[in-house]
Length: 141
Ligand code: CMP
Image 1 (tube, rainbow, N blue to C red):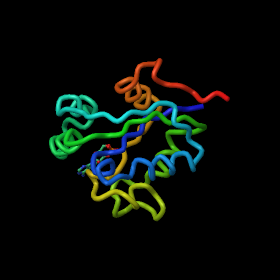
Image 2 (image 1 turned 135 degrees about the vertical axis):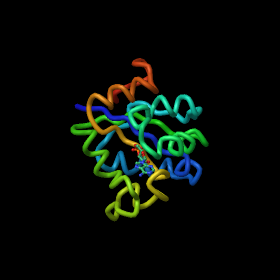
Image 3 (image 1 turned 30 degrees about the vertical axis):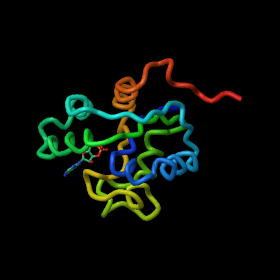
């Protein structure tokens, strides 16, 4: 069982697509085990995307990510990281496959509807960035 961090980015929250996107996750067999609506200030956005600090798009990306509310969740399932990346689609919505989240609700490479962790180490770091351990609940019936 694996966990990954998902962010619904500001334009997709503003556009009212949180529910649509959660349906895609659940439809793909991923369980939502933590979730919250929050907002990053510029400094927290820079910290979250620190790995991209040297990239030319860093300033614009962190401005964008701090401009509005985001919906952050932890998704759990077998191969959750790869499965989430598959249903998100390519980083650039123009290149994303039909039926993917970024194709359906992304606007451009920056406002691309969702972020998802890319590896187990980054997933662990990104989950801890937003959630305390006791805010994550695996479903039990
Ligand atoms: P995300 O999954 O949030 O992780 C890093 C983000 O950088 C990525 O999605 C894109 O939104 C953004 N990004 C990647 N490449 C570019 C680019 N060439 N121009 C602007 N933003 C980019």
